[in-house]
Image: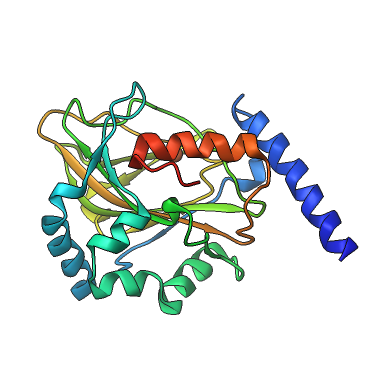
Length: 241
Ligand SMILES: [Fe+2]
């Protein structure tokens, strides 16, 4: 009991310090790994997602802030409007094992179902519908390691490399567009700098955004949770942290 309380308090303090430092660009050089799983969804599930995308057209929430002008559908809404087997597959042990093997994190699991970022859809469209945020690291509200996953569903662009770019310990990685579709890029987004390059006219990109942790216990720090609520409101018009 005392041991677990000490562990929690130490993690809360480390998270507080980490969020403070990463806003100043100071991140852990030992947390710079990223992994790519190609053809992560079986072909029939991938086709199913594309079919579902057509039927959820009216559910996209458009952001209109300086740093975000794309559209999104949060996890809660996604579960209401999609019923395909692909959704169940993403939460299956088979899929989770793929993420665990790739990251080497045996305890990796999805963040709790209450978190709308657990699985959400993001869309970037044309000059006015992209991300204005440029290079950044994410904030975290979890006491354990935070692993972001970006599963590209559509990348209709005029360039040879995918719009997602990663800067790991100062080394820039871009991904060939030819095999980015149906690939899952896993990275510790609160430590690894990343960005989505500006969209150009006529371009479109749709991704599933997944969130995992090896200890998905949310912080009790109301400032951090409040910040996450604001981000969720901008992305999904839903402040649930
Ligand atoms: Fe990010």
